[in-house]
Amino acid sequence: MPVQTSYSEEHSAAYEGQRATLGLTNIFSKVAEGGDIPFGRAVVRGTADNQAKLPSETGQSFLGVTEMTTAWSVNADDLHVYEEHREMNIIDFGEIWVYTEQSVVPGDPVYFRHTAATAPLDVVGRFRKDANTDEADLIEGATFETTTSAGGLAKIKLRS
View 1 (cartoon, rainbow, N blue to C red):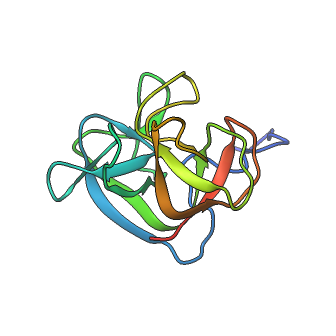
View 2: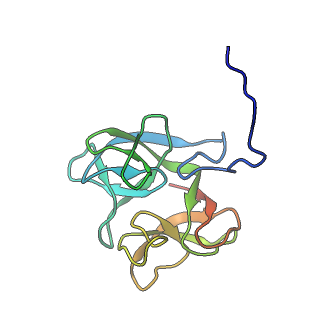
View 3: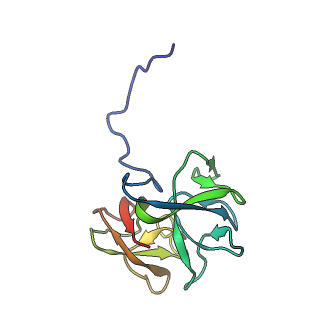
């Protein structure tokens, strides 16, 4: 029988797309459209009723944030993703961990990026606290709930 002989002193506090609490959360499923979709990304309404995709322009209908699950694959960028044409878990109410492009504090509004900019932070489907010259759309009623610096994990609260 294998025995653990070592352990890390510091573990990650959270992961992108991880539920932040065991409180009331609404989770529903849609099929990934338009390519693989990483965990912890904003998704919008897809072409068909049962589909969702990453945002690609302003004014698209925000559905929620993809939840981290054990049903994943790893892509070429070493991101855990829902593969195209596979069912995704999406959270539209509750608290979830996401990466933020900017420093944030509790109470800041939440915007999702629909237009890519400078990598590695400004990635489609990730989050920030302002529109960044119309490259991101507001998520009505959502707020950041933790303090973090740019490129850090932050907890957001979604109120659908």
